[in-house]
Image 1 (spheres, rainbow, N blue to C red):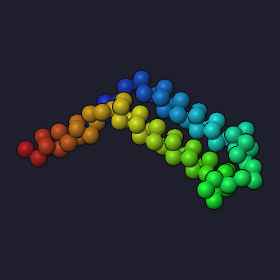
Image 2: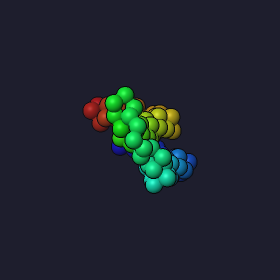
Image 3: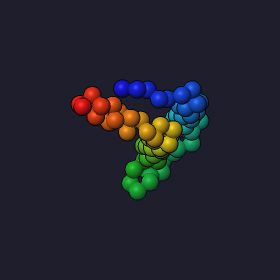
Image 4: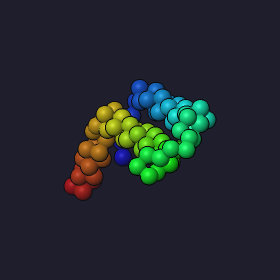
Amino acid sequence: MKNTVSQKPNGIWLLSLCAGIVFLNFPFIQVFNGGGDFFGVPTLVAYIFLAWSLLLLGLIVFSHILCPNSDQDDNAEERRKDQ
């Protein structure tokens, strides 16, 4: 398995980590810690679920954009080994 990741994506991963720390830290959590509901779900729970989901979705999108051929490279190597 060949690793084709360069140094450029490291900034994206670091930015995602910092965004996750900020969005799931005290000031943002306190804003949504009111007594309201969002479709029957407490706003704090809805916010944590939404923030976590968006962070994961962003990481998936960035990984596919920055390393689009990594799966194809792995499959090509496996085919070469089989021959």
